[in-house]
Amino acid sequence: MDVVKIALGKGRLEEFTVEIFQKIGIEFPELEKGSRKLIFDDESGNFRIVLVKATDVATYVENGAADIGVIGKDTLMESEADVFEVLDLGFGKCKFAVAGLSVQPINPNQKLKVASKYPNVAKAFYEKKGISVETIKLNGSVELAPLIGLSDVIVDIVETGRTLKENGLAIIEDICDISARLIVNKASFKTKTETIHPLLNKMEQELARMSV
Ligand code: PRP
Image 1 (cartoon, protein in one colour):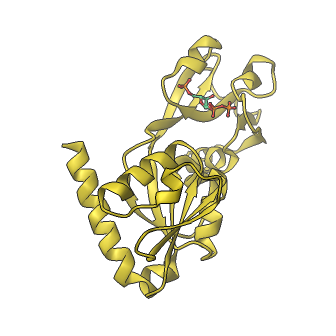
Image 2 (cartoon, helix red, strand yellow):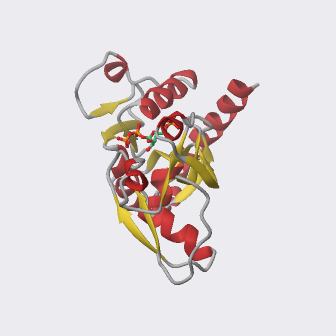
């Protein structure tokens, strides 16, 4: 049987995913011990975790270097990767929103400037509304942009809302809810179905048990 490779972004999603695997009887002893390695095999030899940068999970899965990935819906949307999104894991909950200093009417004579770590998400959101915008890609501290005149609004993830509040910004419009998702490479979904399907079923059952 071919090994099923699982791409995990280092950090919070990794911990939760490893915990679910443990609960369904798939153990990665070395990973659980806190090793600094990047590749871990489970005890059965059927599963291999590869630890990657969270923003690279979709790239590994889309290209088939990993069969499965765990990724935030925000990062998945931004990647626009051609993969199957098969399971909502229900953790890492937050939302995408448009935020700014105040609700200003859109001036049709001026392109709205939108700063974001997620320019593709921002563009797609406004395109759907028939509004063309100028996106400005930032890598962090996005809240600064409207405060110092880099953009009119931001598109960002909001969890507690504290960062917005403490910077005098407010939500103008919600875009969508976000949580961790399980994605599968399209070819692997067929070729490794014997291992992937039972894994998905077990994970789904465990998630249902956990939410009871
Ligand atoms: C994220 C996001 C917001 C903040 C939202 O930033 O971009 O800034 O968290 O969380 P809150 O609603 O609970 O305040 P992150 O912590 O990833 O830092 P960054 O600005 O460096 O990207």
